Image: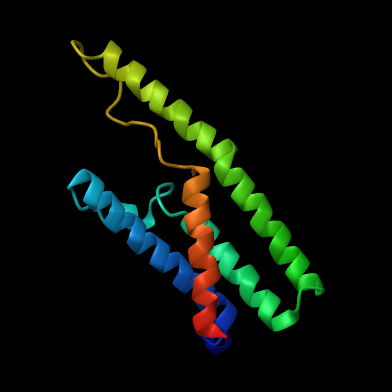
Length: 145
């Protein structure tokens, strides 16, 4: 267990994730004028913490192992797949959730709601959110070099 907490690649990636989550919470607070701790662990929003985590990890692997290493290739491939998914499938799912929630709201304005639950709308990322998550992921490893 001690080795886990000495793993600077993992600690760097977790630090990038934490920075992105705190920024996401503060940005949401500024925009909505309502502080929500749920944003600290929630999906979607600006910046992408998934991207921050994986870009920081991949950058640290590049520093430690080199760009020609198998570990870098695996890390890079994982990062590309997750970022692509965040901007593609997950983003579109969030847009669909938004439309479904609007339909439910319109149908049930005068009546009894079918359910009190709403679908999560912030589960994916725009390219801008991913870009800024990537910037965080590139900058944080500089402190770990």
